[in-house]
Length: 157
Image 1 (cartoon, rainbow, N blue to C red):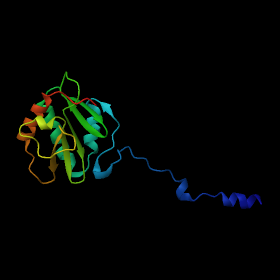
Image 2 (image 1 turned 60 degrees about the vertical axis):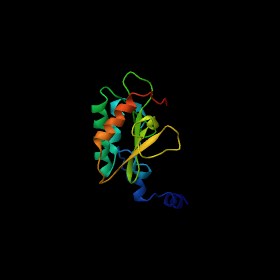
Image 3 (image 1 turned 30 degrees about the vertical axis):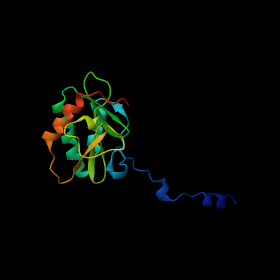
């Protein structure tokens, strides 16, 4: 009888093998990295390092453009997205998020920008710019919007 119980408790070799653990962040739908929330440059760097494919190049380029346009910009990761705030000010003026076919740049006070960014939102003051693979990356226009947005009151979150 003891032999039958021992045989019944045998565990397949596959189950006994150690599971590989990855330190790489999990990708959410659309390829957006799941990054723990945090303040400062380090969480944003972790986000940028985890962005997949062509979006990584665009995301790093956008981050560098924001750094160059707004010296001393404040950074954080919230809701698995990088957020940017004007130095010495409360709130956030910009965020972005990866989707399958584009990188969505969110201007929290986008309706106040000139020209208004092209993509509308369900939120009255929010506007978006979509950066797509293979499309021109208009750094001059983005830098202008970033400059304007950083001078407006930040969105508190």
